[in-house]
Length: 123
Image 1 (cartoon, one colour):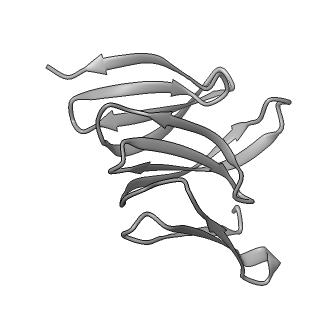
Image 2 (image 1 turned 90 degrees about the horizontal axis):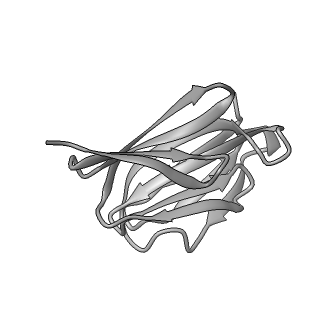
């Protein structure tokens, strides 16, 4: 239970509501220029190995943004097509983001290394 809820509008605006801090609202600005098409909360380890929750958002602007629970950007990935869905997997204590790129390919992105590991094209 993170205690933080993400509220997303059609225009791509995002606010985090911290229910453990008396419903404090944290506006998230400048992450996306258009509608959000996918969202996912992920629990992974930060650079020092400490657990960190992050909100991953994919948008029609062809960007996947990664934001921590206090609204700071921890990563961003520009794609050549729209990310239509996001999933997370953990293997050997590493967390990966699976990005469905408009039904054309599946991207395996390492959250710890902040890089694309492989892109699998659909035939």
